[in-house]
Image (cartoon, rainbow, N blue to C red; front, side, top):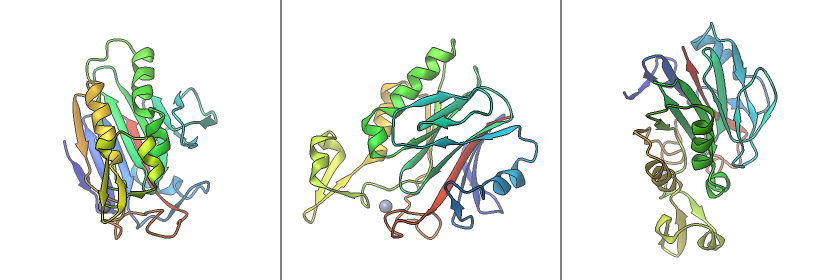
Length: 225
Ligand SMILES: [Zn+2]
């Protein structure tokens, strides 16, 4: 399984009946507008509902139950045709899924959520909701890399030093490594990393930091067919 770029400049990952997508700069997706709906419709005309969540840099994980309003940073479903959506620009969009007990999770992982253990908490919540899961797979979308994510010294008190690197008197944080280690600690079977950095690959992806707090976002979403 690999991540493929479509003719529409949207990246696409497929594992049998499970799909995950993330958009490029061709699509100026604005959070809290509805301009993401036509993008999804053009790719998946027969979906049932799109589910968004008010992202608050938390570890709150929601199981989708109907077309409600959700607050939190991870949403999951086992229902076919439901599309959970996450918006990012520098934070990592993370997609988790299983095929044997079908479910998908869309997760928004920035430093605050990662520090609050959103990923392990989401995995625990999935295991509590679904019995007999024998594999969980992960896909990591575009986010800011360890060479681009300069942070303040207050991070020294927050993250293990192995995730921090000092270079030319500047401190850098490696968020992706935290996520990967948390995935390994939680027996994630397979990790597919897009390898994209929102700053290094800024021609393709929006970066909140590189682009002066842009309101544009990368749209990430998944579906079970
Ligand atoms: Zn980078």
